[in-house]
Amino acid sequence: MIGHLLNRSVDVWREERMPDGSGGWFTEWVRVHEDVPMRIAQPSAEERVVAMQAGARLDGRAYFRHSVDVQRGDELRSGDVVHRVVATVGPSSPGVYRRADVERVQHAEGSVNTLTEGETP
Image: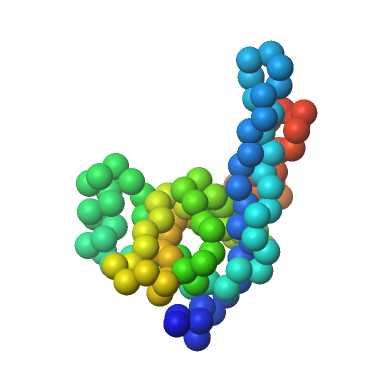
């Protein structure tokens, strides 16, 4: 229903944790979806103020087809642009779209948050 509005594509990455056997965790970022059509819209000034009053940062609103599995904490990656999903929202009418409130993540030059099992920061 909103397919004609989805003007870019991203890969959806999710952090997976596995016990290391010593009470800690190995973490690994895994790509769960590739080339997902989506759109990022800028929030209004009022929406940003409300988010700041609630202690959150809101850099954009990402819209997807309703069937896309996007969860809080996921990263939306497109080249060197990364957005972290802060929250997901569905519309009042099911089957229309899925919205994710996102914040832009700025990594140090040349680095992306891609620690794999056994690596340390």
